Length: 106
Image (cartoon, rainbow, N blue to C red; front, side, top):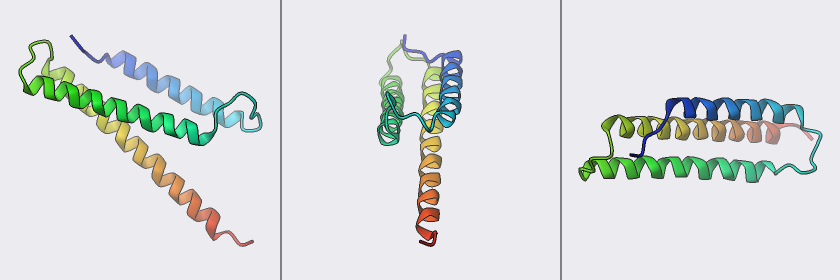
């Protein structure tokens, strides 16, 4: 049975929060860290994987797979929705930051 653990999701969110807080204090150190572009690309790929998993669970449930519970499908769907919405918010903030930089006088 393919189920999504709520505690696992919360642990991932806490780890991402800790990573984000740690990243803001280590802005000066560049050695051995990945670039923002690659980090953002990894995050987008992660969201894509979550959406694919959600779609696969939904299709399996629709096709009558007895190993897939409706609750698993709903949790995966919500997880996918939240991940996509968070990605859109990050994109919006990046666009706002870019526009603010472009408006700065030289």
